[in-house]
Length: 472
Image (tube, rainbow, N blue to C red; front, top):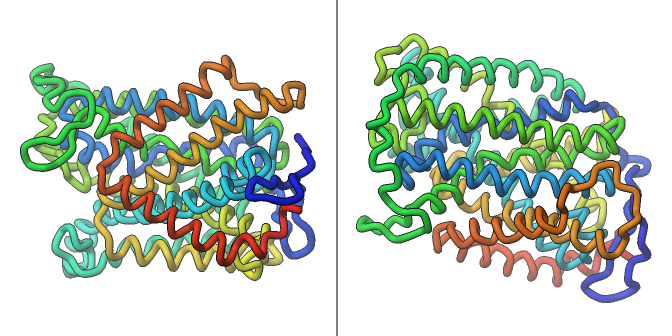
């Protein structure tokens, strides 16, 4: 692991990583590579394919298949960069920590502040997506009123199921990391089985006529007649959300038994598996039914099965989503609490949040995180949440790719248990691809993201910088 003396003063002072915390700040090492692969697959395969495929189809038409491919390629390039940095700097904090070690404090703050946005909104988005599958079951089986099972975008008042599932997952994480990861691995298996059943049932209904016109809104982002920005890249910029769960793996570095080996296996392995899964599901979905019939649906795959006359399989898929989507919540709520924990340990957030329980889990910050995301999930619409979450992620991906390039120049001979292949091609491709995706986001999302970071810099200069303890 590289260790470079930090600059004594200035906004770009760098920290020296001590992967083990001390005393009440030490996280327990309980995870091995199967846990990490399951954590990654559990994070990646979820709301993106189960719910956001409907949003993407509304923006790109049948060419949403191409949107998945573009987003997957960009994420694959970023994942390779993450794998190198995670094994060089096996400490909690993900892109925030890499930026602090390599690029300097103020950049690390911007990335950490962006990750707070990403993880908070991802957990909220997944909770809303879970509610989309759970609400029909709750209304039908238990008579729950729609006003308490739907968000404002569907005419409801409070998305109570979304709030409930966040509370359940937060409680599980407080019990222990290894216990959470073991249950996660089982639920991931169930989710893969459900998607395999969907492909097996829907693929025989494939009709090439459903792919015409293949690209009704063009490739680049463009304003359509109804005032919505559409196109292949507009959809890719939204469903990009579906791929980036692998970065949650890097937040588990301090809790991994053999980080030099296991982090790379977890990041790259989960990413490859999920690209294959997504492409199969997307082709089966778009080929089986006209995109116009499921665009915008909160449960598009179940809707497709019902339209195909397979209500029993649709109920199985919906039930599987209700049971297994919390794996995404678990992975991202886990990741966000570790980002918060690391920033608090560095003094950039209140240090009292950087405490762990006797079982080695950061209970206090997990509960604070759960309250924040429950409020967001209960009151905000799905599409707006996902787009803003993507902006924070893209900033983090750019930073990690830049870290790889800087470290290849600054410390070319430093030990690397995983090396990004063709780094001088892959890392710039990740940077340019992420910048293009950011440009393809809705203009309002770009504005709100910049506003979020202006507010973040105010917090940094007024609170965080004077209290930073991780940099000399």
